[in-house]
Image (cartoon, rainbow, N blue to C red; front, side, top):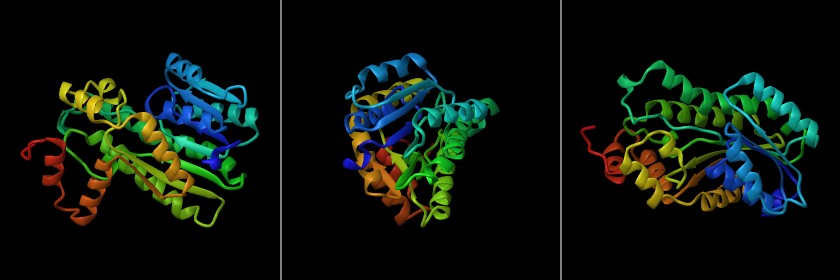
Length: 268
């Protein structure tokens, strides 16, 4: 993947999971990095794992992507450090807590999830897109989810944010058609990250992520291959491909098969 060599990439949510794996893989490919995460200690752990550090420049900073002013300051720091940006990964995200039905969710939980998952993407795009437009052959990558394609129960706030990321990204792709900026939307399936643990998910779901999930490293390699090929939609895991196919085939009636795939009871 020579596409990333000597490019400058911004990755949010790089303290763990897919974000960390993207940073490690891109560093190995000779890509200069601006990485951020709300958890400073986790981000420091990512920096320690980066290969090829003698040959690349790394800028790391603690960042709450939901904070508009903080993101603006961060973007100015990155551009001042590197002089520009070639690739942006709006990756930071969280899941809804406690696996609650919509009627049980309070406004604070909606705001927490949407502020990070959607507004974080908007903030990143708004701050860095002018700089991407100033570079040849640049790329903007927004991370949605398989739950930006299908909607299981008890994921309402998360689905609302990830469907919105999908729509926002598709609009960007339409508006930037013919420009030097390619746009991709990533839809990961079950990945072996700590997102379920952080969301206080039920024990069986946590176990499913740990035992059945694709490793973040494998996910990162699939994402980077899709980005290098200029794919509009990058599906990660076989489950993501199957669910995408189901909702395309029968958008009004995919739910029973989705329930079976996910081990859910249809009456939920």
